[in-house]
Amino acid sequence: MLPTALTIAIIVYVVTLIQKYIGHPINYATMQVVAYFWQKIASPENQQAQLALDATIADYNIWWDRYFWWVGFVLAIIAIYLVGRLLRSFFGRITSRLVHSVLLKLPIIKQLYPSVKQVTDFMLSEKKIDFSRVVAVEYPREGIFSIGLVTGSGMRSVSDRLAGELLTIFIPSSPTPITGYTIIVKRRDAIDLDIDMDDALRFTISGGVLVPPNQRFSVEEIKKMRQEQLPAQHK
Image 1 (tube, one colour):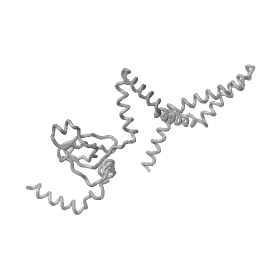
Image 2 (cartoon, one colour):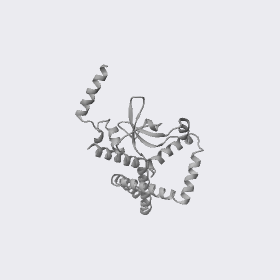
Image 3 (tube, rainbow, N blue to C red):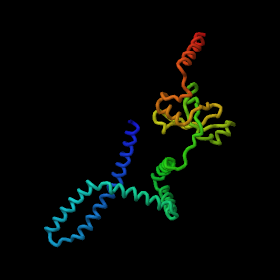
Image 4 (cartoon, one colour):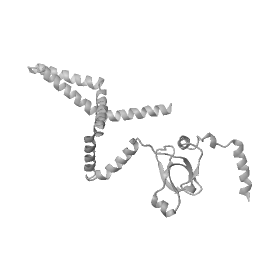
C-alpha cells in the first residue's frame, strides 16, 4: 500500500500548493467580482436595505468559500493552459524571449534564473536521457564497486588528454535514485552488466536487497566460493 499512499500524498500536496498560492487568490477575486455585480443589480435605496444586502453578501462569501473552493483551482489550471498555448505562438515566443533577456539583466535574479530554468527544462523536456546500458565501476575508490548508468561519451578535452574512449556515468544514490553523482571514466574501467535499467534502479532503491535473478548466487555457489577463499587467506 505504500506506493499508492505516497502517490496520493504527492498529488494532494501539489493540489494544495496550487490551491493555496494560485487558486485561492483567483477564487477570492471571483467572489468579489460576483458580489460587486450582485450589489449593483440589487442597488438598495435605504440604509437598512444596504445593511441587509451586505449581510447577504457576507453569507454568500462564506457559502462560496465552503462549497465552491474548487472554482479557483479549475480557473488556475485553465489560466496556466491558456498562457502556455499563448507562449507557443509566434508573438508568445517573442514575448518569452524578451522576458528572458530582461531577467538575465536584473541583479540577483540573473544569478538564480538560469539555474532554475535549466532544472525546469531538464525535468519537463520531452527528450529523455538515453541510459544506454548498466555498468559497474570502481567508485568512490579502488576496490569498491558502484552501479552506474551510462549516459554518453566523455568530454572532448578529457578524452584528448587521456587519448582513449571515455564514458559518462550517472551513479544513483540509495534509496533516492533521482540524486547521485556524475563521473567520467575510461571505457576499459567499466564492467558491463547483463541487467536493464529497471533492475539497476530496483537494486539501488532497495539497498542491494533486490538482486536481478540472473545475477544471484545460489547457496551452494556461495559456500564453494568461501571454501576456495579460506586456503588462500591462510597462505
